[in-house]
Length: 175
Image (cartoon, rainbow, N blue to C red; front, side):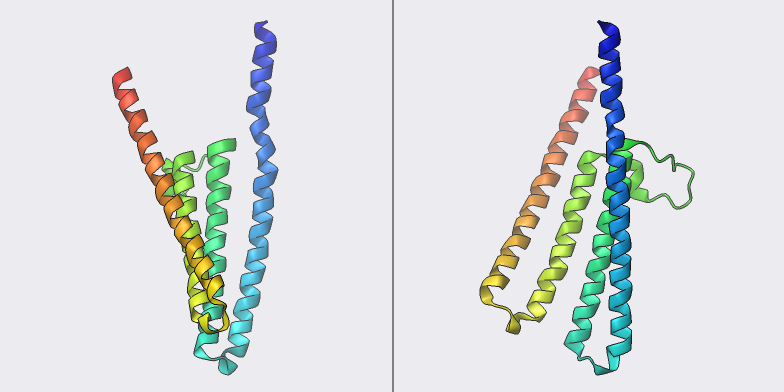
């Protein structure tokens, strides 16, 4: 009876490796964002003399948006792999991101929520810059969605704080 249970547990633990191709796919998606960034940057450089200030600002905000999404991808790829698949063994690596040393599922969720708020902020700013060409309902909807992102991030952070406090209390009581 013990041997089949042990085999099943080993198989369940091994199944985490099924996520590895998903992270590789996200790396490929990041390559697409690098291409998009370079395309937009070349458009900005080549057309800079013919663009107005608002157009330049919109293109730059688009570049910032791409960078923020790429940062989000790095957090998901590196943090997710480290948290759910396998350790990266980067303790002695000079370029190890500071946040990686204390990443867990809760911290990753809060970081992702914060990154989504940043991305949403860029989109909302682009909308406000183009407000004259955008329907009021669209602006209100985008502002409401942004507010929901903010409320969700606060709820996630608060839930993580409660869980961390509960685990700390439980650990102290256990010892």
